[in-house]
Figure 1 (cartoon, rainbow, N blue to C red):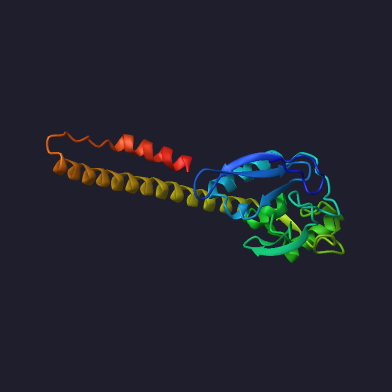
Figure 2: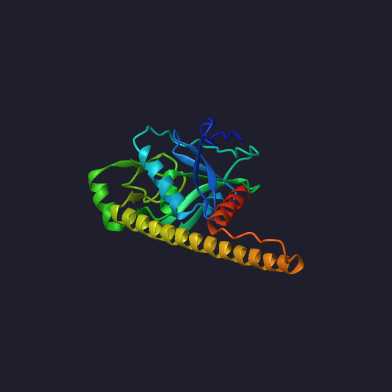
Amino acid sequence: MKTCCPSCHQTMAVEKFKHRMQGEIELDLCFNCQAIWFDNFESVQLAPGGIIELFRLIHAHRDEPRQALSEVLNCPRCNEKLLHGMDIAKGGRFNYHRCLQQHGRFTTFAQFMIEKGFVRQLHEAELDTLKAQIGSIRCNGCGAAIDIKQDHACPHCKAPITILDTGAVEKALATYQQVEAQRSVRDVELLGDAIILREKQRALYERQSRAERYNESAEIGDLVADGIDLVCSLLSD
C-alpha cells in the first residue's frame, strides 16, 4: 500500500527491517522530511538488529537537504489531522505526531534516535557554551529555527535541543548488538528444541504404527530434513 508523507505528501520509501518475532517489518520513510511513519505498534515490533539497520540507513542519508515539517500534518490512512504528543525514553523527551484513530504515528529521524538512545539532550553548561558560539540552530523535531539565546526548546514543537553523542551512539549500538546476538542464539535454541520434539513425536507415531502393522518398515528420522521442513513452515506462517 502506497503511503504519502504526512508533511510533504510525496510517496514515502518502503524499507524492510528485522521483526522482533520473526521475518521482516516494512516501514515508510520520507528522506525529504527525514521522518518515519509507523503504523500502529510498528515502532515496538523492530528487532534490535532492525533498529541498527534503520540507524545505518538514517546515517547514510544524513547529508541530504531537509525541509521543515508542515504546520498541519495529516494521517496517511484516514487523512485526519495528527495530534502532537510527547513521551520520555532513556535518551530524554521525544515528540511525535499521532493519529487519534490509532492508525499510527509520524516521527522525525532525530526524535526516533532520542527514543532509541542514540541522541541525548544537551546539559545546561553545554547550552551556555553553544549560546556563546551560535545564535540559532535548526530543530531536530520539526526543522524550524531555534534562537538558543532565548529558547531551551523549539517554540513550535517543544522538542528539546539535542546532540548526536558518540558515546551514546556506541553504547546504544553495543546494547542492541548484544540483545540481537542473544535473540539469534535463543531463536536457534528454540528451533532445535522444536526439531527434537518433532522427532520424538515421529518416533512415537512410528512405534504405534509398527505395533499395528508389525511387518511394515518404519521411516528413519532425519533431523536436517525435519529442520528444513520446520523452518519453511515457520516462514510461511
